[in-house]
Length: 89
Image (cartoon, rainbow, N blue to C red):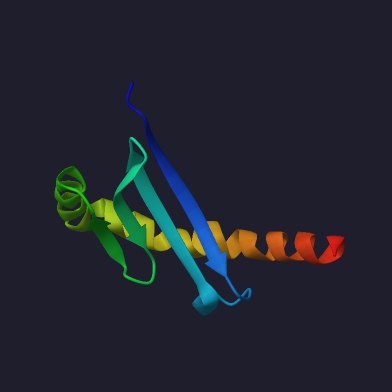
């Protein structure tokens, strides 16, 4: 069978917005086909199908919505993750 999945991640060194990177990667059969990175600010495709999707998404509302995720998804939760980790150490 075929497997398709997406992974969202927040990498951070501190709870400051500038120190946070949000990424969303799409995989198909264990190969990454397209990725959005907040440090790049757009989608980048890695396979023919991913390149076509990246071009389409970068010219539509998808890229605008994804850019907002750094603040709404990561920034909002980094404090919770940091506090939780520090209280357990």
